[in-house]
Length: 295
Ligand SMILES: NC(=O)c1ccc[n+]([C@@H]2O[C@H](COP(=O)([O-])OP(=O)(O)OC[C@H]3O[C@@H](n4cnc5c(N)ncnc54)[C@H](O)[C@@H]3O)[C@@H](O)[C@H]2O)c1
Image 1 (cartoon, rainbow, N blue to C red):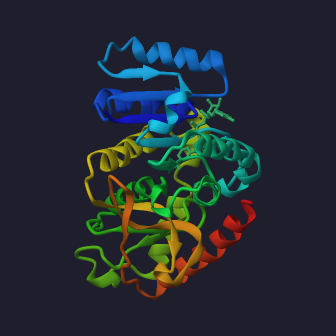
Image 2 (image 1 turned 60 degrees about the horizontal axis):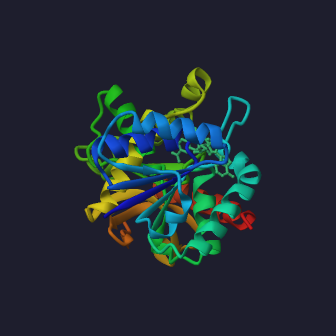
């Protein structure tokens, strides 16, 4: 039996629950939210699909979950310009989530979605008592999908593109491994800066137009859940707590991670060129500071 608990059943949590049910990713889905009436509406709407999956609002089953998805708290609005600006409002929410983890005896994998995702993933690692491999942050897959779209729109090769850094202003597109890109030489710094800026701004028109991103993140989160549950051992861009990899400590940052039944099973260190090394160092400096503030 596999169980997914979704903590925070708003736009992202709700869509992931729906996708997990439709795709048959798990046998049981436990859903939780701070607004009881809203939670009940989400519950009823889900069970009315008639899909053969066990849906429950009983959080006492949280400890026996394989995956806890943390999607509770506040999201960006057109007035909140960066994800990092959400740190202080979401700290009380993540603190409460961590005390629930500790009290439940949970020993599976946490996937953090709530922003600022990297810093909150680090906070969960510090506070929950879970090993670092059990704490992973979602965002890299979405950033990478956007990068590939922007390359394709320009008629440029995209296979082998990658992403590192923050899920936020300090995201680092990696061009040096793109097949047919001459080890990155086909991508001058001006083009890289242009694509990086486009990636940074990609979600704001969605937030302005419909109040938040939903389909893109939920689709990729469902793939991440699948990678854990089905032990896929796939290398996926995720925010991971580093302990010496890439020469870094005391932060969570997006790196290539082999994802399987035990969460992060390997962190892959890949070569970077000068532009990428510089941007990655900037991202690490920024995230170290932000993770340090998440106390
Ligand atoms: N990592 C990513 O790629 C990514 C993508 C999209 C959104 N996000 C982030 O995910 C988070 C959720 O986004 P959303 O669009 O679903 O927001 P939303 O406002 O639609 O949903 C948030 C839900 O959390 C619930 N909640 C608030 N405080 C809670 C608490 N203490 N306990 C339990 N539930 C609580 C709210 O009632 C609400 O239903 C935001 O922080 C957003 O910025 C991250």
